[in-house]
Image (spheres, rainbow, N blue to C red):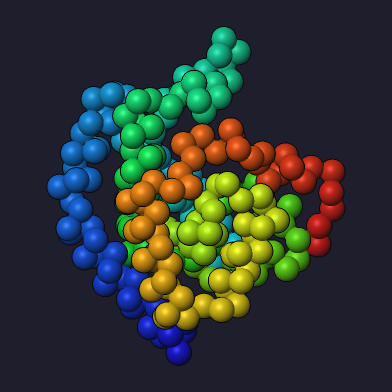
Length: 208
């Protein structure tokens, strides 16, 4: 009953309240990023949502668009600004995703929406992660965040889908707040601790 009827309504109410409460902070961060980058403060990127339907995730932009002489983007570490580094460490870059929650693309709690190019590299069982709306935070994030290997991280996503409940969501919210306050498991540059999924599984064939 919670999964089918209550979760979406709870997400909508809490996302709306969260946006109203954090609006002054959102405005300050947005203006600061405009001053630093001279461009839009928001980062929009296609991600697969529920049933692999593509939507655009909204986050604060923490990196510049600097390229090398051939026009290729520089590594994340070379494009990450000092302001962006602070925003990532404090998880402020995630707050605009409340808009995604409000309009129904995401949930507050669920498997994190990953890159579209990863879709061909999921094992059949791992595709269960797309049977629910993706979340701003999830079981994998409170259980290790980017420090987990891909197999373990995706297995935690599946475990969440199979055990989804109000009590579990409340537990994840509490653990998320604790980790943010203690800055546990925060990795500013994910590439420094793990490969991209497509890079790691390149050459392997998985069921579609």
